[in-house]
Image (tube, rainbow, N blue to C red; front, side, top):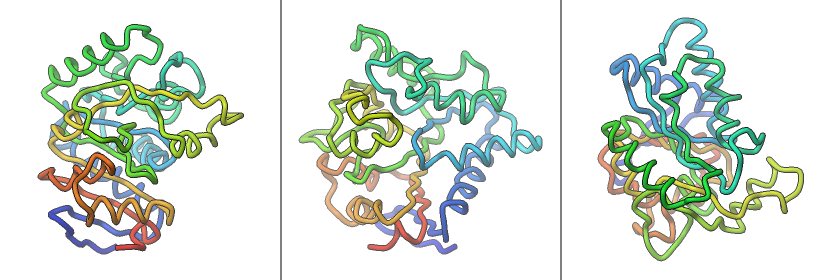
Length: 249
């Protein structure tokens, strides 16, 4: 493991996916031990699966207690029912919530089945603000540089909003569905303001296919055409990436 700094962002380079998962889980554990009622921003997809496994293990071994923790997930497909096996609500239940003691009414995920999108987004923003904003936000990064479902655009979206998913994102997520036609074309996502108001951010990336996006977010201009580049302006960001994802640095 080695540590470098680029544009005031701390980068921890580990050997592989397992080490990345363990390091991220250790940092979340430290956050909850320091502040038992921490507000955690959580991510889904294949990147954080190992991290959730490590956190479940720590909980089962009485190393960490999530009883007073509040969680906000980055995003959810739209429209989708929360009990659909492809929903992120289902993902969070299966990978994390059913194995630990985060209280159900402290678990927050955008409502992918509410037909009033504006109401859903505004309520989510109000809930995040009422919690005092997020203490530690976990992020992944898309091959196109998206964070959450904030896709490349001509402007940064501030609050929670409805997103038209890029073809690249739809293709990347098709592995979770039987047919690519089944992948939702829209999603609800926290906005850039929500993410940037987080007190700390951890971004995880693994694999050679993320190397170009990692290089662009660290060394390229800050632009909504590569949403992750905005993290150059945050005061406390840690990247945990494996050797493959660091390949173009």
